[in-house]
Image 1: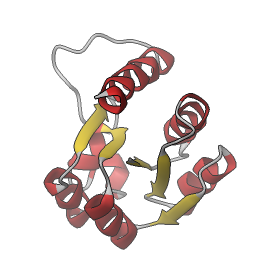
Image 2: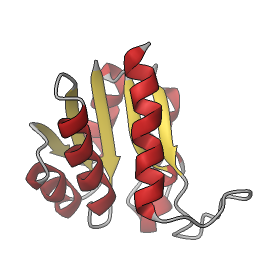
Image 3: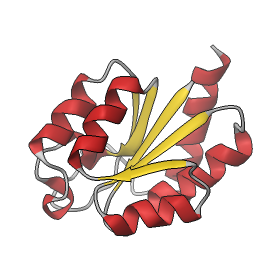
Image 4: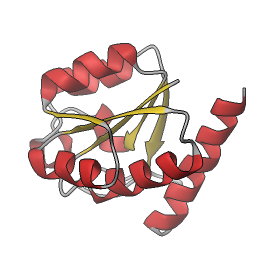
Length: 136
C-alpha cells in the first residue's frame, strides 16, 4: 500500500506523520512530498525513504497513492500562503485514493463544526483512520 504524505510550511505535521506511520506500519511504502524544500527536508529527517518537492511531484505521486494524508489546505488552491497551486489541489481532489485530511484552522481556512483540538490529537485520529484502511 502506497501512502502519500503532503505538507508545507515547516513540514512539522508531515514529519510527525511520517515518523508515526513508519513506526506503526513498517510494511507501508511512504512517499513524502513537500510544497517547499523545508517541508520535504523535515519529512526526510523523520524517516521518509522517498521524497520530493513541488507541484509536479504532488501530481505524479497522487496518481500512485492508495491513501493521501495532509492538512485540509492540500485540496484548496492557493492555500497555505500560496504554497498549494491549483494543479496540486486538483491532483489531490481527483486522486483515486482515500484522503485523510487534517482540519487545520489556519491560513484563512476555517472548518465549521470542528472543535479546537491539539495537533497531537488530530494526528492520533489520522493514525486510527489509517489503521482501519490498512486492516481492510
